[in-house]
Image 1: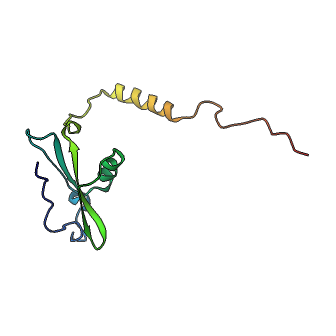
Image 2: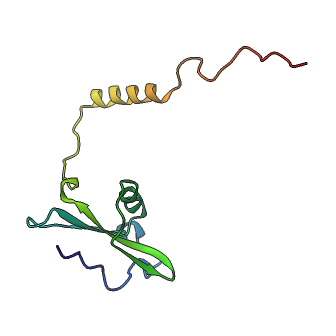
Image 3: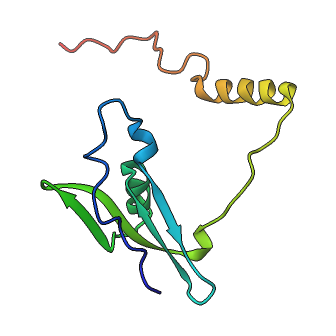
Length: 121
């Protein structure tokens, strides 16, 4: 499969001062039925870091003034999915938020010690 071409000019560094830079951090995913992989071109550091943590190495890095500004990865096509957002009622959302907040709290008394170590001497 032919990798997706990177944009010829680097539009990230040339954004006007008032522009929305987040909108310019694009990700392009390209695949076809013939191959088992997808090309993922991204300007998002977070996505590139996630792909690296999952064991992938970029097939190309585009640099500007010595700094990497975009990456091209080949990923298994099975990793690509499109899912609609999860729909929840307000009561389900509140119940889930409560469960998550309980999981984030340490158990009662965790990290608190009332005993003191015996003194040496």
